Image 1: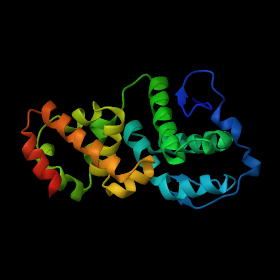
Image 2: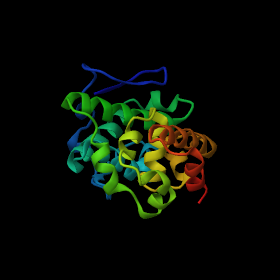
Image 3: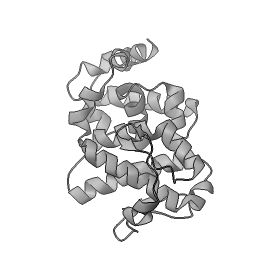
Image 4: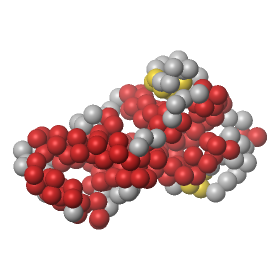
Length: 213
């Protein structure tokens, strides 16, 4: 479970309110599916808009780490229910999108802790990787252990690499999803590239050339 406090943090811990307790099934209105889950039109309008814009990316991210589409459906539904239940806190944040992405990440981490297993990212990432993203990262992809190394990156670098290289989102779209600037995404990706090149024993110049293509 994830608890949202007024300090702009999303903390995973036991004893937090049950996400499902926030939802009254009789009050929900069916809506079109987004990604792998169904949007709840009883959400605040701004939050519903965020779900429409970024819900599929949330679901893909959760599915990659959990390696279970149904579990990803449930988790993303819980994330948006939790955000709706604390919408006043969410709106008080400097960046709503960045805060919501942090809640998703914290909820994924909490679920993995509950299951008592590591992320399935390393095994799942290759099947998610898009053709164009593979070409852009060709200098690194040829090395066994690339995806394991991506899994070991610091959180924000990891998320940028997953969104842009593995899932194939443009930098501008990834920036919107994470609630940061496009320049921030580019900087994090460059830092990640250098860290991955070092971890895999590659010439950083070769990785830079792959980045520029």
